[in-house]
Length: 159
Ligand code: PNS
Image (cartoon, rainbow, N blue to C red; front, side, top):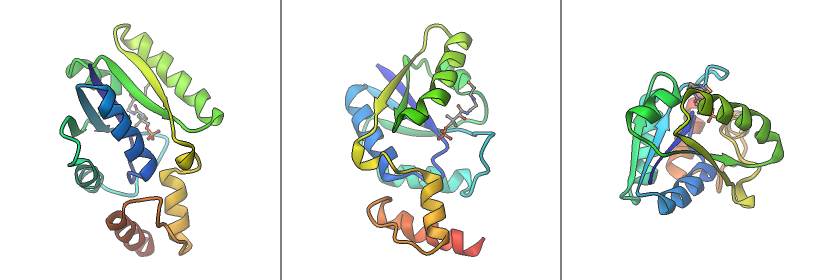
């Protein structure tokens, strides 16, 4: 099975890494795809987000990091993906995820969306929360890999 795990990853958190690890065990090939979410303004450049993802996934041999500037479903079709993986942290995620899954299904019947339940350890965690904590000088240890913490702090301080 070829799976695609799309997101903004702005930046990748320990919650994303947990999903990548678990999804990579379920699939033969897992494409982690950085895409644009037009509802959000991005803090990190595509290059930075790809670099973070490359570093945290180099221990998973069947994981490939990619960027696509367009519709998720077009990229999923292009690589012949069987499934789209999305993580669900809480019921509040569901409404948006359901809408996206149905829209993607309308655009391509053959590709299924599979939801993975986030580990409760990470259910509070999001990239936006991490950036807000950093902005006010809070401790990010345990939320992101250490080398990303330094870069998030440096970036948020500069803004
Ligand atoms: O990590 P996010 O921000 O929740 O990820 C959302 C993302 C990037 C997967 C979504 O916005 C997306 O698929 N963007 C690409 C454009 C697209 O296909 N939009 C959805 C149409 S149903």
